[in-house]
Image (cartoon, rainbow, N blue to C red):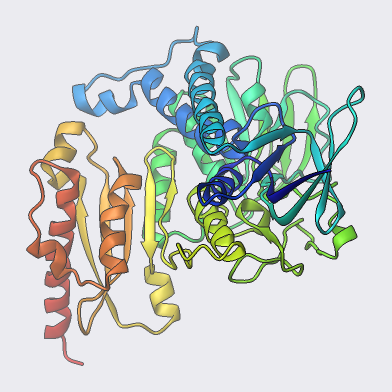
Length: 469
């Protein structure tokens, strides 16, 4: 039996960074990975593929150029699935190589096979029919197995035209029409990707708005953008039946409407990838979604067994997963390095257009009885926005009325996922909207919208102050 200071189960964002953190400080580390490739969902089926496909869709559709040159581009009818997926496969291959290089650089042992607990300190690795199982022993174990798509129980996925967020990358031909079931982050991203390519897209969700964590105004603007891509957005609806027929899939909604589509993408959430880990042997329970409960140090009920990333649930972001694993290892080995994950973290939705946010929304302020004001700046009034042809973007600042302290930043439009970090830094330092007014921004840049959103906020504040109380 081989002994390690740390065994990590899973090589996704949490697993890789947790392993590297411990190895950097001289610990002997092994990663056990079930899949042939490293990188987990983040690189192979989730974060990176969908974001790469977004750029591919923008390239083939010429969507950015439509506003720029006044030309109405259309995607070629000869576009093949290989054309569409080519760049995604190249990026995934390249980033997978970088993960392997990082593992090798830190002298981490990579063991391929299916991991399960033999006892609280021992992991059994099943390597296949012709290879003997390995038993690995460790002082500390980090569970970073990620998540898997949730599939509705009333739908059989035997038909190859039915996809989830993992299998959609294996489609063998470009459809002409698609129904996307679930308006979460994954559903919204793929909806706009396929909409940009000119497919007939119907988005179905039982909730009354897109992405409930977003500020309501931003959510509504995203819905309007979808409709501008000719997407049919059906909120407050549920799929009750999917009937496969030779010519099409017939999807029936709770309202009684039936539509025929070439394929269906179910994007109705994800569950913790804990089946088969043998957690019951070591006394670690999971909830009905397969998720593991941890404390603020990312310890499970067994103190030397930690968990991080999607397998512990919200926020289930690659960025936070990496930080959770680092903090877990700092605590496990008393490294005196990084004590916590920052309480404020940005969220980004890589839809078309991009959406990003950090901090409070108008709705959360009202719920907390915070007296707030809002400042807005539109890309159409920004020189870089005009140059780039993005005339519909918006930067929205939410701030406290009494002292102008910044509370939240909400962006929809070009480079939203990058721009949100400017607001994040001000939020983390407890700054006010005056920070943006006092700062000099390059011209022309979209970042300059922060300054004019702050000026607008001052105007809104002055107008409110003039109102009788």
